[in-house]
Image (cartoon, rainbow, N blue to C red; front, side):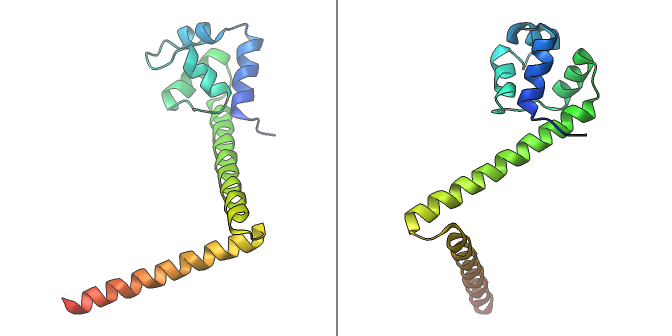
Length: 127
């Protein structure tokens, strides 16, 4: 079974059932959900909590596990894209290739950890 993007899934379910953003928010009967929140869900800007997931599964009569899997996939893809953008941005400013930037970042992190360890060891000896 292929897991769909969460925003696409919600948009598809909402339009297939002829709900507007506001009517779906009203149907959920939760004070924390309004038409703007539903719109954010469809654009993967925000994601529903568990109570909202269960209400959505009841309204659209689909398993909540499908909604949760879709939410998880969309959140993971969002994190991957943030990391890729950061590495590209950093490689642009450093003038390195993307792979060079990745290795440079790893070296900097390693040296920072070693320096932190040595600093804490020297502080511990003074005590």
